[in-house]
Length: 391
Image 1 (cartoon, rainbow, N blue to C red):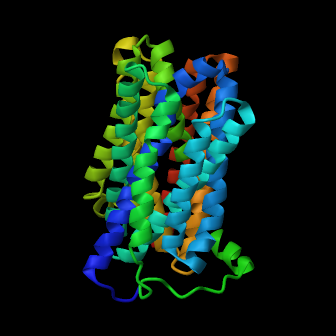
Image 2: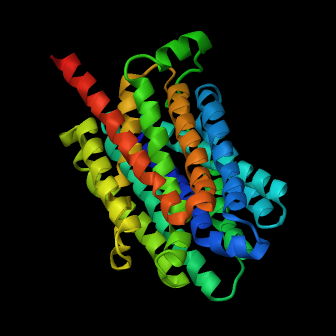
């Protein structure tokens, strides 16, 4: 990146941070509203999970395409597209009542979320080269703050007699602020890399060399875990642990609050401890916490939201590790990484919903333990490869 002014750096750092707040808020309304949504429209867990699948299909599509778009048309364009998709998706989801229109609305909403994921991460990597892991974790704190605020906001409105539709419509205020800010702010040409001539054959060869495939696998399994818990924790705590609506939505807020706290704390240590070592410690902590929260006695249900603290640093730290490995066509490479994240997000909550219809919600949510075990296995392979390369 060529030199640019401090003011411009902070204008777009704020834009990225706020976009991630909107991302966390808009994405995690679903966990708090899904019980009311299922009851209102008389949907089963499988049908509800299949509708939620739309958001992750959209996320996957967006991250695959907007990575290339960011390299060609610029990061500002990606964030503008994100705001437009969020607006259309929220309006559609809060209006329709049948399966396909709802699923399509979720897909459009997912396009917006995926565009934020790619666009904001690209901006931070572009503007904060020396400390990108720190700023990626700090940006993710804003995602955690939005994710924590969403269930508190939704629980307050639902307890006050408002419908899940009105809960979603309220999020349009935040999206409008994001749209106007991004539209008015000027992304400096000097900070934009010149449009790269992308050879897809070369890109694919570069993208799947070395340890890259294990990072793709790791981020897919991680997102399956994070979003699986985020999507189903409220329903699980209400039906399996006997918590009231207010307390169960507060536990979802606690889950994301601890995720936010973990990312804030992790931003000061991640580059000192090392990417792979801290990722392994986080995965082990998440496994233990999820196991106790799901299969322990009702009195220790709080271990389930506690898993958010351990899961917190995984996504931004994997992003930093992959961006260190690839400097050429970085937007496209990160887009591919986030595509795998979208694939994990698409499959995780859906698999839990389908499994829960067959074997019960407790065992269905227990799939997150399998996901954590796979993360640990992938990290052990990466650590072994790192030690071999250093020998």
